[in-house]
Length: 215
Length: 215
DNA sequence: GAATTAATAAAACGAACGTTTAATTAATTC
DNA sequence: GAATTAATTAAACGTTCGTTTTATTAATTC
Image 1 (tube, rainbow over the protein chains, first blue to last red):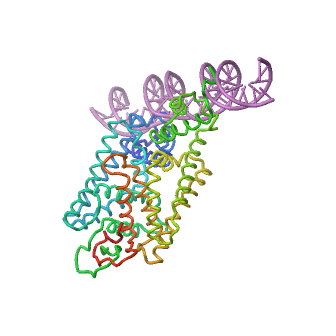
Image 2: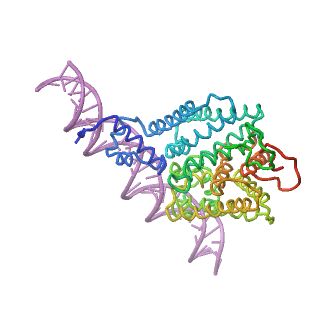
Image 3: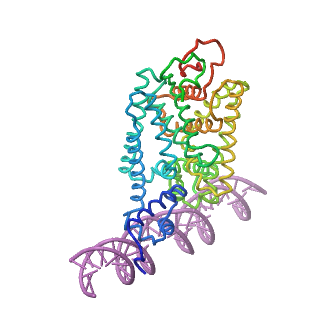
């Protein structure tokens, strides 16, 4: 047999990407064979090579598009306001929403970096660094404006990103907590962690960190 | 050739473990071949099978001993005091010290879980859960005692652990920050995050989260 | 409706994999 | 110092891997 009735390159490529994200997230890139992937899509292994020249090209494509999507999402969500608290809140909300929606792709992008060639690894890390820099800028502006109080901008940014991305490890939709509840909790943890002051109004003094920012 | 002069089972086994942790952390479990591991140790691949019946047995041994070490370390570091702030500080300090000292082994234990059989995965996860439960207990006791203020004990525990373990991703000894500086920063971020009150003394009231606890 | 192009199947290639078997030598025991 | 045990090598086994080649059919073009 050869070309099958109703076959369509675009549909097949989309099916390959989707199946690949799911399989690599579940088994790992090295453990997933091209034959396994082809079987999941419902084609022969050779058909995959019409869309992706090598297995690594497939991985790189998935990762690059994930990172591009993350940068685009933040560009769209970035608030016009200059207020560091508003900007930090937007960053946290966008980060958590994006990653919960793309648990599998995030897993792939975070865990399979070592399977990329040096050059491609550099490309992905460049995008990641650009994204992290956005957070560092918000934190630095916040410290300079007196809105945040923290030890070290770089260290705090890394801690926050690890904390937020970690959501995908344990969060399962439809369990005890809703996405909105999780996001609200992470937002208040973030604001306390960066020592955010109450941005407006004249709240009564407190010895407690918990109500530093009303959310 | 056969047995080589000066060869010693105990030394070889130790060399295998050490090389395996390093190689698996760098390449990933699936990507590391037994021949590669043997070459790193300086023996033939067949020699490895005197010490570990299968590749997976080797992985499981490394993971189990890592987790046992973590639980033992916490047992040794656990303070006698009942004060939640003291206990939380001890937990954070022990966690960071242990993981920075064992970056490679931590990487293996966190990233290669999917290569374990179902039964062995369960064993490792049981140990991990027991360790996490210690933190949840501290947080719950702290909330009940009025020392902490947070939304959700379980969620906060996961956020803290992800944040702290994330240290191994970016921290490199001998760079900008010392282990002591990093630990101090993480400690103060933790205390702010959990909304810790000033445990003793009569510090002046503040609208800021940053000085909730003197560290 | 013939010619062309797109999408696939089927089969094979050489390399590498985890593991086993058998032989060999160093160290230890008695 | 002979017998035994521990530690290892060398070679091979069957399987699976990523990938390539070739043939075949569906869809599209003119």
